[in-house]
Image (cartoon, helix red, strand yellow):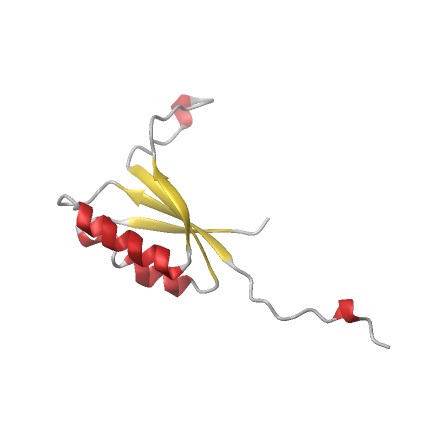
Length: 109
């Protein structure tokens, strides 16, 4: 008789990503663009939340810190394929208006 516990089904691991939204768009975004983008990312099943960034407080040595004032928000995504998120980000309102976002992989710890 075989030990069933030794046979695990193949499950591809989800990778986690943090998107840093930079407030560097060249023209103003619209509510309609944001709505379209949120519909697309929610439909993808990869979007796990996010927020604007509010008031900041530096703790520790302020003379050695680097400003993050250009980061105005973040989003979290989980996906097996990074390309899925990269394709969605082409529709990001900040990107559409000449700005940039930064996708960071969150390593498994």
